[in-house]
Image (cartoon, rainbow, N blue to C red; front, side):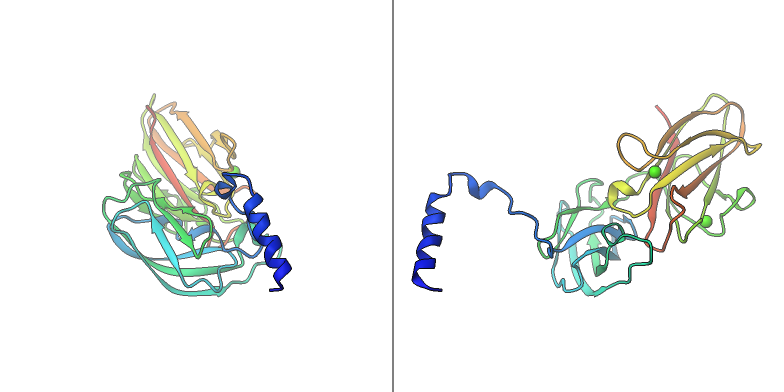
Length: 253
Ligand SMILES: [Ca+2]
Ligand SMILES: [Ca+2]
C-alpha cells in the first residue's frame, strides 16, 4: 500500500466518531444468507440432518448454533441448487449447506439460531410440547383427508404446485378451535392459506395472511358435533420439496 494511502486510512479511523464501531456494516451483496431450513421443524433430543437453504451458501464450511446449551452442529456439505423457472432466488434460495444438528432435549422453541459463515442468525423452528404428527400423502381431497388429533402439530410440505393438504378432526358443538400455520415466518417459501370446512364440506372460515405475515391464523366456533376438515394450500399454487409448514390445531383459550 503506498504510504500516503496508509496515512489517509489512519486519519479516517482517528476521525471516526465515538460509537461508530457499534454500527453494523452494510450487508455485503455476496454475504451468506440463510432463508429457511429443510425440514422446517427441528426436533429437540435428536441428532438430525438439516439443509439450510439460502443465498451464497455453496462455499460455506462453518455453521454455528446458538440459543441451546450443549447443541452441536457439523457441516456435511454445501452446494448450489437449481432455482425453478418463475421462482425467485431471493425467496427459494440458490444454494444450501447440509448439516448434522444435535439439539438437547431442553432446547427451547424460539431460542435456537443457526449462523452460516457470518450470515444472519436464522431463527430455527423447534418442536414444542404440542404432539407432533407427520403429514401423510395422499391427502389431496376430503375423501383422503388425514385424521389428526386435537391438539396436534402437523409437519407438512406443499410438495408441488397445486398440492392441497387436507386434514380432518373430530369436534364438539361449541368448541373453539384455533388453526394456525407457521411457514413464511420461518422463511419457508410457502405462502400458506387455510380453509376450515364442516362435515358437509361447506366453508366455515378461511385465512391467508394474518397479523402482517403471510401465515394464516383462524379461530372457529364449531356449530355441531362431528367431523371438520382443514385444507392447507399455497396461496399462489406454488410448491416444492422445500415448501415446509407447521399446522397447529388446538383448543382456543
Ligand atoms: Ca397433498
Ligand atoms: Ca398466506
